[in-house]
Amino acid sequence: MILQEVLFQDRSECCGCSACVDICPKSVLIMQEDASGFLYPRIKEHAECIDCKRCLKVCPEKNLLQIDSEFKSFYAGYFKDNKELISCASGGLATAISKKFIQSHGIVYGCAYSDDWNTIEYKRVTDILDLEKLKTSKYSQSIKEGIYKKVIADLQGGSKVLFIGLPCDVLAVKSIVPTKYHSALYLLELICHGPTSLKVHRQFITELEKKGRMIFFSTRAKKNGAWKPFYIHAKYENGTEHYEEFHKSAYGAAFRYMKRPSCYTCKIKGNHLVGDLMIGDYHYVEKGMNGYNEHGVSSALVHNEKGEQLLAELDSVGFYIIEIPRRNAIGNGAITRAIPAPAKHEEFEKFFVEKGLISASRLRFVIKSNIERSIKASMLKFAVKVKRFFLPSTRPHD
Image (cartoon, rainbow, N blue to C red; front, side, top):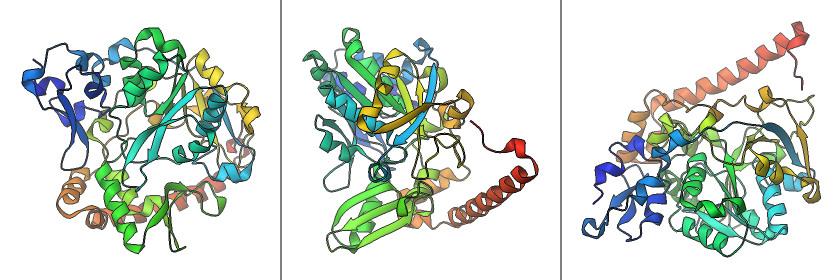
């Protein structure tokens, strides 16, 4: 019989992928929220456990030593059509790959908001029009129970499957899908800074809905088409709209101060990645560089031949793509290391649990941090301009 402490002893030892729940042949495990809103597996029926240890075999946190990956090549690109590009979080690469995959009769799995906007969950997509639901980043953790079984069923039925998710979720899929189906399974990892909780998301939605019934919500909207900074955008049934800069919002405060505990020590980075392709924002690119677009640019880091296949012939769906230098592609530190916990993150979480998201976001150190971030960003931007004026060699280059 598996004991609860064997699954995990500390909250930082579980990434919340839910693979253990899906793989259990006796359904003795369930996912439960803790006080902060993060999901963890719990044993509901000890007597039914047959001690098969399948839950331990598919756990991403317990299977890292078997992995030794590397990046082979690097690309960047964006949708040529500005309207389509602006509707995406960065350059739209995940959407472009998904379009081409569905056109070749494949099935795509990715995150979407529930119809009432209160939950983030995985969706199975077979129609290009439904890819709209997968657009924009989701900064809270998603619900994944049952999705692994659907992936396996599609693969058993002879379909190709593209799974898009955070590195821990991708590792969970790779671990739970039988090896004989891996050739038809394509795994797309997202560059990850760590998500906050669904409880944060629900409370933020509740606040927005005080203004009316929502018909659209996004945490990665491009106000006036600008890639950065990105905005929270809500549309209401009465025709009104809400815009709020993400990093200055209560949602942004939680994303900064209250990640899932396992994210602060995440080891599923660098050479412990198992996807075929990793994608994210191409933050290194600047005006004047090859591949720049003011409306957003995606980067792609390829692990293997299947990753190259996902990037092949994207021009057929209207996507422009170029090869870029390695140093540019790996400039985002979240690719190779966990983002450490910020000072006072425990205080923020405690206040969130006791008083709620809005009160926590108004803590003095949070407000101070927002001001300091704005000042630092302005000073850095000015300093870079001065440096490049006097030292032309430091200007952007490909």
